[in-house]
Amino acid sequence: MDLATRYLGLSLRNPLIASASPLTGTLDGLRRLEDAGAAAVVLPSLFEEQIEAQAALLDRLDDLAEGFAEARGFFPAGSLPQAGPDHQLELIAQARATLDIPVIASLNGVTDAGWTRYARLAEQAGAQAIELNVYFPPTAPTVDGVAVEQRHAEVLSAVKRAVQVPVSMKLTPYFTAPGAVIRRLDAAGADGFVLFNRFYQPDIDLLTLRPARRPTLSEPSEIRPGLLWIGALAGTLDGAIAAATGVETADEVVKYLLVGADAVMTTSALLRHGPGHLRLLLEGLVRWGGARGFASVGTLRGRMSRSLGGWPTDSDRGDYISVLHGYAAAVP
Ligand SMILES: Cc1cc2nc3c(=O)[nH]c(=O)nc-3n(C[C@H](O)[C@H](O)[C@H](O)COP(=O)(O)O)c2cc1C
Image (cartoon, rainbow, N blue to C red; front, side):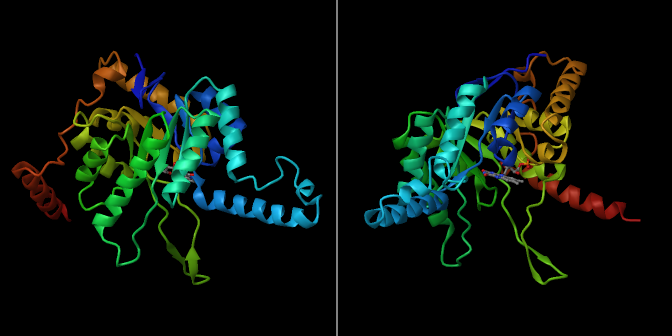
């Protein structure tokens, strides 16, 4: 089975991309992912707050140095905060020098200046594409949906103006009308979309009565919003689509491709089972495609787009009603 695909104008040897996580945050992790079959990697996001923290530290050292010449020397090259932009930019450059697969940088900014500054630096360091992780939870009840959507469009425009490499947007499904938002960003020049991000959501530790902050890993049932919206949008956008969230087995990979994803990202399964799990996902995809006579990923991609709903038609409402009534009829 020919596994080749394209995403963000990049040729990929297969559809599997390792999404941003601690595994993609070290050169060793990146090498292991490439060896296990990842077709591309997304490095962990650089958060604007980290850039600001490092800049503030450097400013303080410069102030100190005015009165005390050796102050800067206390922090030789490479000893500043490891999570800061220098470390991330160095990792991009090392990844490019070491890996044969495409390297995608991820940004998570706050201000336009923050987004664009680091986007330029990431491009200069060698990133072949930039993924924008727009984490903008409108928890203040005064922020309305229009403002949230407008902010996404502004961030995209600012970064598109700043760099030449393709720019993708990693989005949440929690918009009132995700399809309309994605089509608007597509028209504004997004080169691709990661559908969907999986945001940290709070829980309560009942023993300590404190917020439980540990991130949880995803489950296969979480692919459903992606199936719905990728199925509804595939073939209608200029930008490419990477499916994300909930991949545990090859079944999820196949389903995402069937609804029209150009590529499929995974993190939780790799954190659970290690980078070698990519081999099982690829073998499962080849086995499934081979058993059903699909000669390539291209021939199976999109075979089931627009068959799961997404456009408001009478039959969607009919399906919805019969699914609900069907469950009630099966209760013992
Ligand atoms: C520990 C951890 C760290 C993550 N770090 C990032 C990050 O830096 N940037 C980002 O955009 N997503 C990050 N993610 C989200 C993943 O890239 C991915 O989108 C999400 O986990 C859903 O995919 P999955 O169901 O395959 O895990 C992180 C997820 C986990 C579990």
